[in-house]
Picture 1 (cartoon, rainbow, N blue to C red):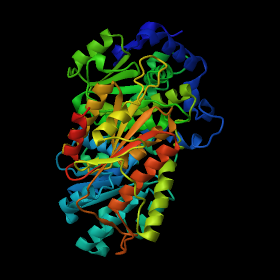
Picture 2: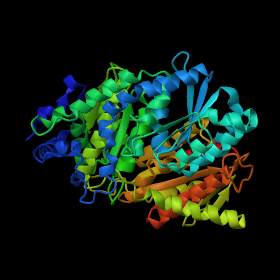
Picture 3: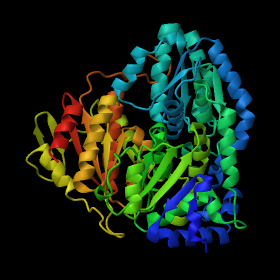
Picture 4: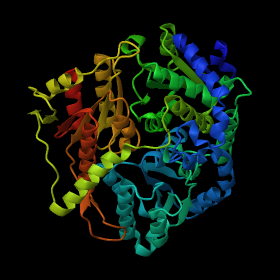
Length: 581
């Protein structure tokens, strides 16, 4: 049995206060050791998870990423030098999910090093978000990075077609291709398009790496280099963590940082603590969105799952239900959340603390969490590398797009009640939108013990992302969380469909889903193909089909969902709803 004090690995930078769960986690660590799980993972043994090797054997390339990508540094560095010499000063990455979240994390944590590119990420189909970059970028100085593993992601290709035509109008068709770079798998449709359109550079990634495990591959590292991040140092930290995560049955398993964290997450989820709640140093806060996708899309299936709770305001112990595992990532001696952490520990709540020396330790964390989720998947009995429910919303949306292109209309939902510019759509009667919201949330089981329903609320915002919108959504979720003592998440649509969307439809069905939509002052047409003036759909229509498609998929999966449409000022409408709770 793993000694209980092995949960204090503070000399290695991590420790856990697990209380009553220490025995179960210790037993799990011992099983992982005696069954040789770590050696089997490194040997790419698919039976660690399932007897069927599908979407497992060809999804384990991330294990070698820290070493393999060292050899790619000269290629990436030469690309970076070429871009800077050509006079580019800004880049816009067009991607979704695993293709965009690591670059966004790098940008928000490291920012832009002197004399390097300002690399922004566009992962929204809201026309306001598209037009923001349309009007704010300089054609001569902008590089576009088109990033999609499959090469066929509808949002990414729609954005590519739009900005390729944008560049061709400003610079001429002959010059447009030089402003584009592709990151994709070999043989994908995007590779063929990139060659046909004379893209400046095509990075072909290892096809054995899944999107959410791709932070330490070309998908994360090529944009990171443009920001001026030291790839050698980042990969050195990642390689050191990978070596630690090879510790197997001949050692105490708590010395394996990935197995240690994976056993904690997996065993506590089985015991009802299935809401991994992040408490992050301010400088590390952007890491939460990356980890959110990794955990949710990997574990939310077959009626189980671990809900990552990112960005939720940190509160006193009394505001939380009994379904939480708290994980604090702390930068150095940062004491921003020390008081709250101490209170949680003193109340006997399960708390994990991981200390990073500096921001380059993110290289270590990417690998630690990938290994941890792989181990947690083993304990939960699921395949952490597939996403069986993601396609359901996409299929409905595709059908709606086809119908719109043929008939020119979308399905119209009938509101339950409308008042002061807010329309509520629910499957029950209500006298006001606020009343509908309260009645909807009253269905939640707060989960007061280990085996309760463990409800959570997911706010799905199909709106233009902005700092003002972020603040309004955060206040809205905070009101819900404090009033009902429920875990809350917020995701912008359609971005979250490539992140938490799998868990929403694949977990145990405890979620309550609130769609937020609103007026779009302007729309933007999507070219049918790059270089073509023809358009049969707009970004506004695409976004609406995605919202309707996910609503239908959630209902088909037996989930509870309601929808609000807000005319005029959306943050103001959210504020009115929040005040009514």
